[in-house]
Amino acid sequence: MPSNNGYQPLTSNGQYYPPPSSSANSSLRPISLDEACADGSPPPPLQLHDKVVWISDTGPEYGVVKWLGKLPDVGSEWMAGVSFVNPVGSGTGLYNEYKLFETEMNHASLVPIVGLMKATDYLGSTARIDESFPPQKPIRRSKQKSLDTYKFYTDNKESPSSSSPPKLSTSAPSKPASPDSSRRSSSLFGSIDCPSVLGDVAPLGTQEDLTQLCGKNRGIQGHHNSCYLDATLFAMFSSTTVFESLLYRPKRADDIPEYNEVQRILKEEIVNPLRANYYVRADRVMHLRQLLERISSMRGLTSEEKDPEEFLNLLLNQILKTDPYLKLSSGLTSSLYQLFVEKDETLQLPNVQQLFDQSFLASDIKLREIPPCLIIQMPRFGAQFKMYPRIMPSLYLDITNVLENSPRQCIVCGELAEFECKECFGKFGEGLESIAFCAVCSEKSHGHKKRSKHKITKLAVPAEFAMLKNHTNIPRVTMELFAVLCIETR
Image (cartoon, rainbow, N blue to C red; front, side, top):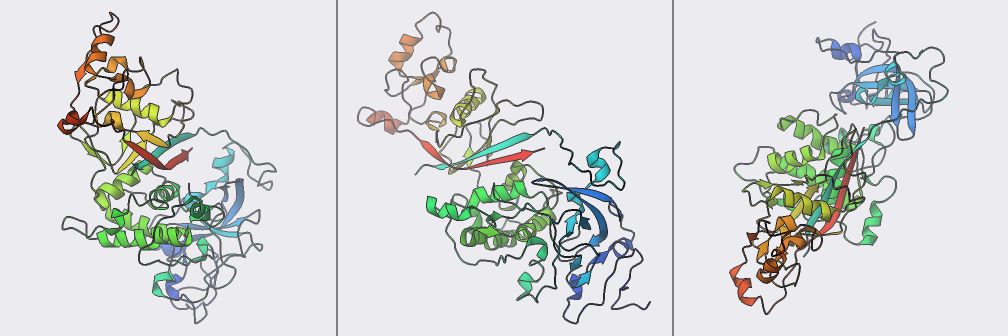
């Protein structure tokens, strides 16, 4: 059969491409399995007619692979055209005017192969996969779960994601309005438009405004294990200006060549649409992920699940090079603080303030100044061990007692503290407040034989405050919680 515009209408692997209409964009033509492997590239781990399982939010969905290849307007990853048993897709196998395969109406979907499992792997090697596929009842497996939790605090002066696989269009898409939207308005991500938003858009502030982010088609759409990144960006930009400098700092001589492009995509394609229209389509975030993977040493940003800490360090420290938020008395600087504590059996439901105090007590370090933003990573949970099954967020975090050279109150009399005794932690009160004493109370409390061998440390008091200590109240420094990011992994 003669060729047509450089490809065969009927490929050797049985996949059918009808001649495109004159309006079709040839750059959007799907690339078949044979074409993609013609240059010697290794084939994907799935084969045609493999029986597969896609895990949805409501359970497993079963299907059969009817097409394999790549979609230029999506990326370079392998895609599978799946005929699902249940109507979880759309159309019958049409994509950008090209017929990829045949199936029942609304049973066809294009799914990245990284989002699929072979049925034999899911059901077990001993399960029989034959005419009875799929099984009458889904097999439910108990799964070990772990939680990584981050608390974001600011100086006191998880986003909805897609719950359905990518879907095929039932008809040819209309011609894009502009080159900017031609490769990002793919029907794989739904029909909701997500235009770039220029200029300055303020974050949502009031409780009434925040309700606009609730419900269907709100937040940042998920795709290809993007939940960690979607949730982090949502926490950073939806309702606070703490990270606004990332969007506006001019490029410096030591910045990477792609600095302005990263900043533009972050602001105009993600942050501004989220604040203005309350929704960001997944391909907008994929644009950022692809750029970050290309310019950084971190691999798997477009397909693999990552730790939020990895993404924060990449974005803040390597790409946009923001000034460190934390300056520690040890001389180190950091953008976030990991809490390290030993389990306290007396705490059944600890709060962040308690764990924060315990961690700083154990580390023997202090903050040199009040941070503009305090990102705290909770004690990590393992698959087999959980230090605490639950942690109560503290709406306000008191950091007075971890600030270097900051005035503190005596736990006994309330006067200006001049000494600190870590061995008295929890003896006269709670938290780090319990270790600060004025000279008189320190002498009295440590005159007791039980505390006579305690190691007492003299505190540094600012000279200007020491002069006014009898004429002013001792200030307390608190930070307000503005986001909690909790990632569930299996």
